[in-house]
Image (tube, rainbow, N blue to C red; front, side, top):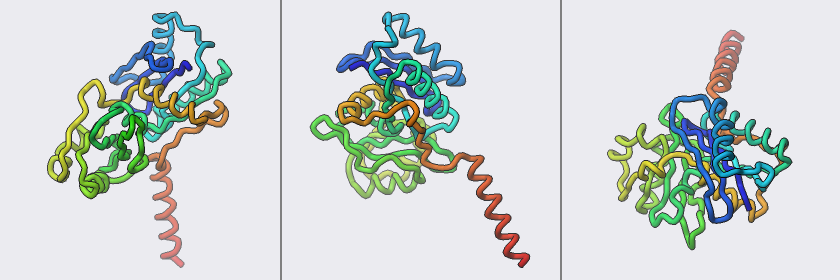
Length: 243
């Protein structure tokens, strides 16, 4: 089975083609460019390099969230457009799960940390048993204090990865009481190859959807939605006070 993987959930833009146990190509860039300007040109480049007939793709795996709201929308639009054009199914891969899958086979518990601002992270806890990934704590949006407290509670060695590591490294050093480490540079950010490889696992389990049905999973409201909700709350409080 040949799967196209896409990940634009964070600062990294990544495209990959995985066929069964082989990664045929991957193009990953961690640089300040708009994903809408990079994803399709990156796909076009690797398609040329491996002489890929796009119709030979069996499914499109996409990092479905959480993450950057703009990045997720671009990734979803790209995946849906390709799905419609090629008449291929989509595979929604939770972003945090895909990030954890970078460390497939790790003996230590894996804790992805994606910076969600305001001292919050998109995170989860994962372990690999019999070469299968299992969620000890499914992906969620929580405070950095909450996830570190959970790690301490489980009292198991852990490896952290993701863009949240640089943001919260000092906090981890001060508050993590279990043995911990950080993933190396080539494994510590989102990679479309991991999304595609995990997509193969999900496809075998029948977890596919149509392009029309795919929706990103933001996990929480956008900043604009939060600000609007706060304005409405204050307006209601003022209305009640005047009564």
